[in-house]
Image (tube, rainbow, N blue to C red; front, side):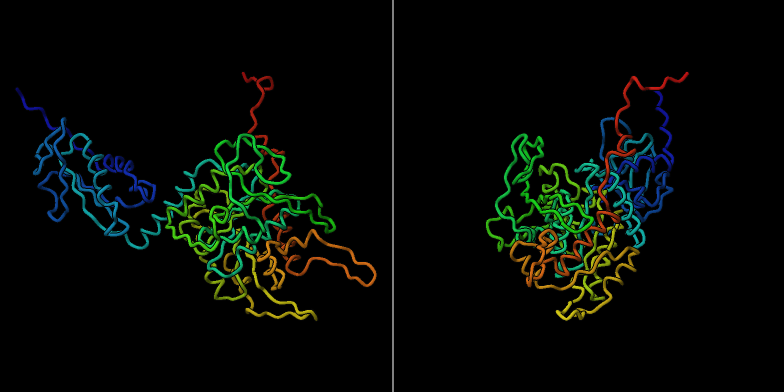
Length: 461
């Protein structure tokens, strides 16, 4: 019986095509697109250079023998693979996947892998591709098209980011909006105390209200958590509607028995907690979702960029130029994850003395510097005021003053909002009217998604 002729060897392009099905499980893209598969050589054993790491296929039920020495009946394929680090823990899995994929091609007797390490430029390019793919593979938006998601970030702690989040939520709600607040600072949660909300989160039953007092909207939420809700009085300033708004909030502070308890969680647990706050809460219809991020640019920030691909970033800094240089990292993180940066808020900007004089206690120029470097507007400067601190401690955000003006009478002067409350009101006005206004779902864009009735279809031909 005649010996069958050996199968023709695959081309190098065919091997590269197969390698596009080998996915780096950490970066979430194939090794060809990431630039990890540098080179492919297909040749007979005697043609190959000797200095390569030799990976031999095991015998299979069909096809040529792929034992310890290979055979001369097929080609040897050498794949040069560059890892992000020489000690990559996924090396064994990538090796297995390459051997299985390439070894399944007709005419391949043996697969060898030549290991290398990526340069810094190659690593940066691979990470950019991975981030872009993460955005493209993001799950369906967790909130309706009408919801504006704003991530409130800072480069470091201690700049008053949570205070800005709480007061901005109140100021927006005072304009009649429904505002969701996610306290994503799992380790350093403070939103419950600042908003004056306490009590444990509870599961919402079917068709149960998504909030607490006087909340009429209903959702089918059989396995979801009901956020804590509070009503906010409307702003009574001229030109601003006085209809009340609402805040819906979730925080790890609603799940622990004592706010002084330390949570010693690692990255994956932090990401899962934030994911639960987004996916497993009966939010209802929101105009705005404010997310109070932890300081820095770690796992929580990257996870939120994937879960909320349409989110925008608001960066909080102080007048210190040194602090603003650190805050630039938050801007860099957002842009590497394809998030829009809407602007900068300079907190603790200055102190206005009773005689009207202005004192820049913590320096000056930090907010302007960061806005200039990021190419975004400086949306506001929040002055130093005792009422901000006491309001945060007492659960009465200073922005509540916007809806609590009492006219004066006789020798009794009018009681109105202070400088900080006015600054938060101006910030909310800018966001709601210019920078990130609510999305109207009654316009042309909304109608695109609506099905066209069959009786109005135009017949062609």
